Image (cartoon, rainbow, N blue to C red; front, side):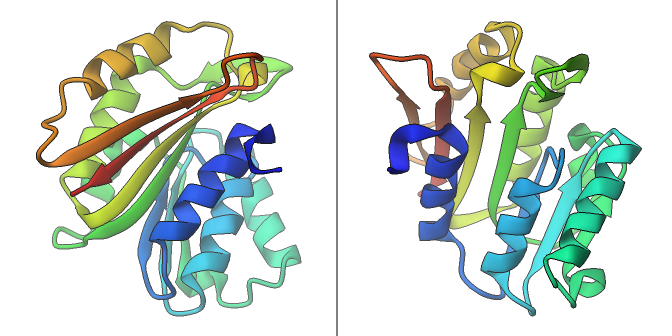
Length: 189
């Protein structure tokens, strides 16, 4: 079932936008689930840039990539131990991006000491939009198990609603009859 988990649905959407050879961003690496998904989609000649403020999470992701036999990971995946609000300075100046994903909230339901914040998330997604290809896709995954508050989502939705509709299509996917999380998607048109 595609709609049973927000990450699974976000991956379904990204799968429509990403092709082998594309450049993509995992703005919140965490344990590397999205990074691994992206690396598999862009194949050996694509590039994944992953951002994460927690060094342990970067190490966990690197181990997962190695165990998943992503043999070309040194060339294909660049893991950066820094916040996603620094995306613009970390990427080569002329680089265009086909897709990006944010998983908002905490690294795990047991630890809320390092969480994504509204101001850094909004800054980061605007930086990505400035590099996003036409037809490119940016998604936000909100899993209720990893979010203590709705505050970041409310700020994000308010900001997204101000995007120019002639340039971006913004969609909000949320279950009506259960709290299974939500996915926000921006397509550059």
